[in-house]
Image 1 (cartoon, one colour):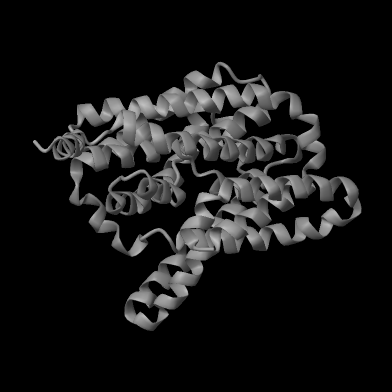
Image 2 (cartoon, one colour):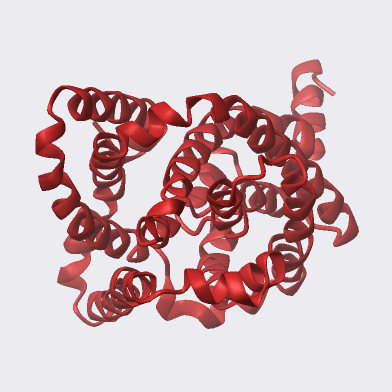
Length: 332
């Protein structure tokens, strides 16, 4: 199977992994301790492989298209947090659920949105250039968002030793390792084979991660099943608003259609599994946040299947190419 095919079918791979994980956790509850132990190394390797797909060494190139960059930053880090605040009014009054929604909806995706941009006919170079900017900004702004939404006392209570260790051990260290890997690949072109192999890893590794989470959190998943319909409504509304917001910002900043498509996929996709280590390190009474994050990623993947039709055909059609195609067919 080609890498692109693997990414196209990833939603089904994750669904199978979650189903198998729930079954494993139900049938073999005494064995989930091994998976809990293996989950943290798996997450570390997953995030390292993911970060190697983000061109961190080419951060300066991101500012070559200032209009698109401003639109993407404004949309992701100024407007969407207001949208999330509004959607929080629809959320259940359960701290773990609300925290999970915030953790996953406030941070834009930095990896598979590039794949969807490519599949949707967007300017992939812009997507690649925006990725490192997005990653750095979200890591800097997430504590600010949590403080703004929950207040200083809650933010401090959440930022316990385990969560800080997860942040530095499973996000900062893989980020540094990915940067060093990218520099080594630039120096030694023979290492490009390593880069190609790393590009295959995120999907199967994430499948293993969601399998492990489903197996270890099966009790929490069963107890929260009644919440999933409520969460589904919130996440679907978010996807609709994100697409319409991309259209509005595209018009406001006079972006060409291919850049508008990048903006739509950036606003619609969230950095769910980069937030997983933080959610898994939360105190026990907030463990439901993990289920919220995993469920959002599944809703999003189905949503991206719709986006792949909606974005190029309705939100950002390339009118000139259609006109030329019609003229060619009519012989005009």
